[in-house]
Structures are given as structure tokens and as C-alpha cells.
Amino acid sequence: MPGYGDDAGFQAYADANGYTVPAGTVAAARLRGSVYLDGHYYRRWPGQPTDGIDQERSWPRKGAVDRYGNAIPSSEVPQRVINASYEAALLEMKTPGFFSKTFTEAERKVLTQVQNIRWTVTGESKGDRANSLTSTVIDNILAPILVPNDLPAALIVS
Image (tube, rainbow, N blue to C red; front, top):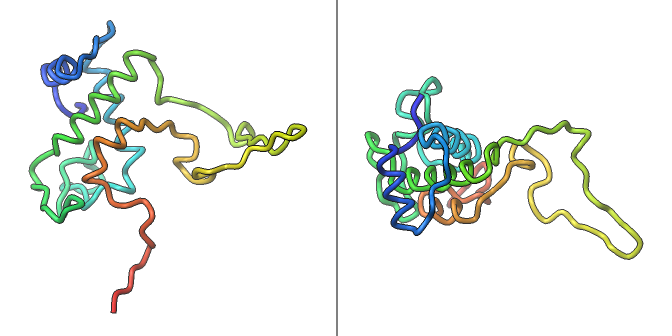
């Protein structure tokens, strides 16, 4: 089960961005980074997997278009997805298990009040992404190809 991109591309990406690659197995980190992307962004990927539900990775996809209406070829993985997987791999290599958080529902807590201090949840507090870490760098890399997060389930245009 390969991750997006390849080891040489990963090293070129790290060099171009001035990153020092930590010790570790790049291929394994790329795979973990790709698994994170597929799990974290699956609802926001455009189109659908070319080989259906049994496809190992979410990309390539058919019927996918970017935010500007440009078709994404169904035989390709966008470079943005590959670069985002490299970013995720770097995070994994710096802190092994970075994206692998295990919790129980009973551990989900929100500070409601301590004397005059009160926290308010501003993000998604329920659902499958509620406890998933998010990288703003990865979000920014993927922004032009992600389906907007705030679209209604049904959109009626008259």
C-alpha cells in the first residue's frame, strides 16, 4: 500500500522548502501521512475514487474539479495532494504518531468554567473529525482543490 508521491520527490520537496528531514523511514512516514490525508479530508475531496470503495488511496478520482472549475484528470494524483502528504510525513517523522491519537468518548472534555474563565468551542465539537489534528500548512496546500466545508447537503438553484 503506497503513500502518495515517492521518496525522491519527498526529499526534493523538503530541500526546496528548507526542511531538515529527521531520521526515519521516509516510505513509512509517507504512507502514514497519506492515510491521514485520506481520512481527514475524505468528505472534502472532489469527485469519487476511480476504482470505487476498494481503491487503496482516495486518489486518483473521477469527476473531480478544482475550485476554479478546472477538471482534474482521472488518471492523476494532483501535485497538491502529493505535497500535502509530504508535509504530513514530515510531521510524522518529527513526532512519530503525530496524527494517531487514541481516545474514548468519555475523555472528550470542554472546560465550561473555572472562576471567571470560560471556554467556548469554536470548531467542530462532534463528528469523526472532532478530535483529529489539523495542520494549517496542509489545509493551505489543499485549499484550491477541496470542496468547501460549509456547503449545504442539498443546494437548490432557481
